[in-house]
Length: 293
Image (tube, rainbow, N blue to C red):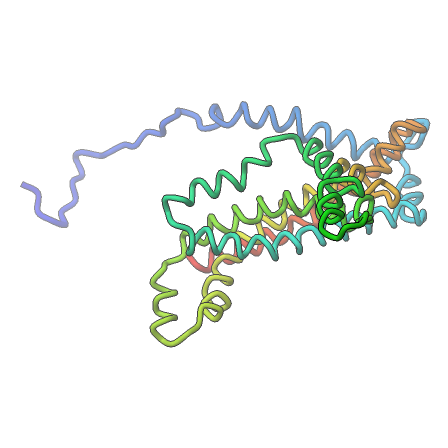
């Protein structure tokens, strides 16, 4: 018999890893990442430091970019467009996530999530083109308003920056709602019950309990939405009309027009820099989760 607390020295227990060498398991992923992600990005960044004749390293492309008002305006426009889409999507996504978590019946929650995700099973370009037909002056909305008011109605909404924000925010609503909802469902409901027992309102419970605890989910959704929107080409072209081009449109026009690969690579490198900077708030999520643990 072995007493409790007594150490057994004659029967060592050896634990073997499921795989003899863990690198065997992740090696295919590393090869894929290197071949289809790291190498193309490295080539693009390197190409941005070459001249039009591809001879020698130079900063002339970046000097041209940051001294050309048309290019810098397109960069600022891309950032503002993506930021506005994130703000609009967040304002709508938080009530939706709250409803799915605390108001919707558990049996209907799966159906509601399906209805939220289902429209996004189609192509991004097809959805943008569909909204182009809806928002045009001869579309469904204008036709319905004309029937109600008894006279033709010109919306004047299509081919504006507002239309681009609207189209991008539609995708952000789905993404941010899902990331917030995934965190909200993990919040202990006893915290909200304690808030009500102490005389707190639903609004106070949201501000002091749900909002801080769901903040990591919002950050993840907002960053992902911004990354997708800042480099999007379809929505600013189909809904915005391209009258005030974003950086992705200038990059494509450069490739189709002068086929200046180094300059197009510079556009791509600048966009990648913006994406890297926008991903920095994810460090806040990691820090907050670590503090909670």
